[in-house]
Length: 580
Image 1 (cartoon, rainbow, N blue to C red):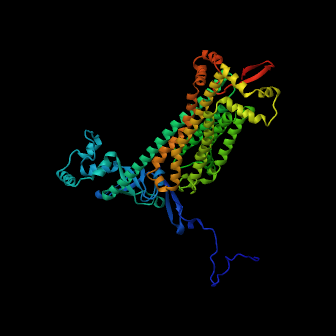
Image 2 (cartoon, helix red, strand yellow; image 1 turned 45 degrees about the horizontal axis):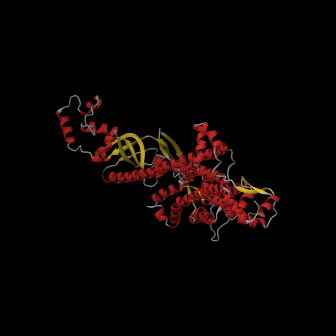
Image 3 (tube, rainbow, N blue to C red; image 1 turned 30 degrees about the vertical axis):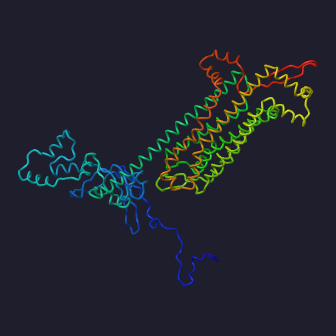
């Protein structure tokens, strides 16, 4: 045998023998649940310890039920499972177990009652009896003794009002008293008296709770579906307006338009991934029929556009800050590549901030009956961190840059800002001969030239209008993002600290407030469209009126790309104004 270090075969310290460890045999295992369902009769014979045999019912559709007050037992059809005190999942899966409340067919008991008492039971007024029923109740010819017997029985033929209502509906509430998984039978008794009242209250309360819950879920799904549809339509329409408007005016896409396209893409992802997946989760609540990995990925993709949208708002504010407060840097750098850098940086930060969702969400099983699973969050106060990163911090950064922009716009005119920036930057770098010549101009001469130039004054006025219009547009978008998400983020933080209120009376309030944040994806495109009606008319003109294309091409340039006035020296004797 050899040397063995296992001690299961050795004696204990007291000298007693150890029980050898071995795998349990089939008859020693715990009894598995039969999960008897309603269906055509199907019973398996299972051999048990001692040679006994159990009748494990897998499907049953009939059973013997007693009407105790009448001393009557009839075999009848099982219709449905309506209540189980210990497990609601058994009701959903229509599983027959001992103690379950079910509904059975009332026809066999009605036939017995009418034959026994010679009286109709729970018949509607004006309802005609069939020949068989009429024969069963009245009979052809009956002796006096038989008639006296029926008259005596009819004195005690009263039926409870609740049971009478069930007979009118054709279904009776009954309780299972046998073990279908052990005996292969589903027998029981009809509920009466106080027991019937007790279970009717339970069933009524459950139906009311379920109906209220389903009503709230359906109303939420409808609202989210409408928001999803409006968000998809609005953002796709905005993409069409920007593309067609620039194509007709033969102009390149501006930096702000490029960043707004990034925002449109984030709003479309929010509508499709965040709202779409949330609608699917609500419709299958509390079950989640995918794997744990899919559960984590769904939550990750739901949060990604929520982070991307405010980060893109910050990118727009930084871009406007450079364009207005630092115009020379804005025009000397690649003004079309820089917005892409800002947009990609915002998406990168959004993807990094969404990574914790892969760890705080997981799939958990809530039962062994079927695929009954749901998603559950790990207990961690992530709400306050999420609100700070996704809402408060981007709002503060955007507010800082727009404060700088507003102070610059209202304090200094356009040409003075450009002149100051030119003076500061020209000291630090070498410039071309033409720029050196223009730099030798005196400030007084330039001011006189500008005052006498009607073109320059009109150009500066037009530039200021477009500049202020751009600031208003982006500022309104950022303010809408801030104020629409403000109630939800505040409630989200309160929810992290007040669990009882959040999952109790405050659940409805939280659901209604969350919809305000979802409206942000619908509002953004329409703000842009209202501020740029000319571009919208040009884009719509391609659909409804072909003549509008030629008119738009000959019209003024795009509202988003302001031109510049530069004074260049042509000859030694004079100067010329050129507009770019």
